[in-house]
Length: 326
Image (cartoon, rainbow, N blue to C red; front, side, top):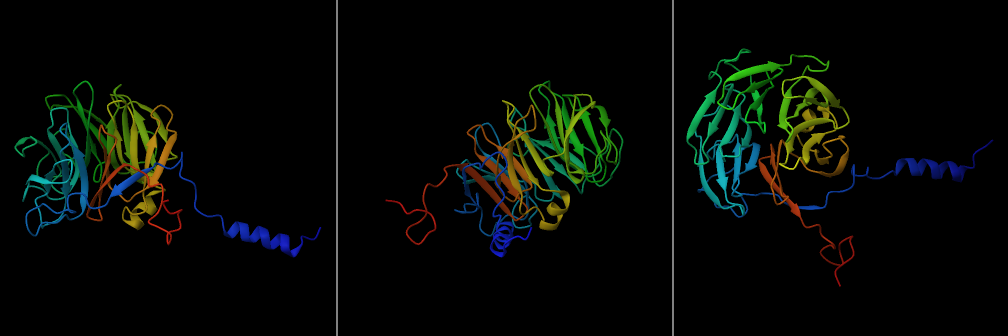
């Protein structure tokens, strides 16, 4: 049967004009403040962020930014509206990477060049250090380029030891080595860049196995439970106290590396099933969600993004594509 030329043309046109791919789970309707902490700029004169590797907030809503630039202290603290409060860490780090804040408002960081994990008060006093500065290793006393920290509800904590090694290390509440698991590979329980780690309220451990394009899920002692392979190359995982999971991710590890963390997506994930509940575009290396539902993103573009509810209902006027306001 001969297909009419007009029908064939219509099919070809339809295939060529498929348009934007839908947001998985539906569009997350947030607005963004693109340069939190720098617009308006209240930092000391001449200060600016370098590549922002991590961001988190404490119980008072203060925002802690961990960055790799030379024009400001590595850890800079702001109030909830972006006003500079204090900073610290000059000369202490080889390469800032991860930052988390525990229930005591202590600030924990990972350093991928010095191979260390550090715990500070929220005023910047160094309390404890794990790992030997400048000495990579794979035993109970050393790391090889650790990436992230996660706190268990029972008081233990985990470190994803992830750029040089391919393991997760578990410590007791008082900081003593308990166990570790993982090695380089693609089988269950093996890793290729465990880049982020999080623990839910039941003690289940979620590890972003980034270069293997999956999240692996374990019990508290490292027993493999299951893996999610539909979420791409996840940069960072955040689980709220009420077990809401949020991630910043890319379609795959090649896209992530090629775009240097641009073209990513924020996703809200159902913790029980892994189902995507909603998504929106954002570059980013690190993600933190506040009790008020704000999403802070640390971006290697040198930005902190503050996403907050407040979707626009109209454009700027008659010249915009959206319907102008009445």
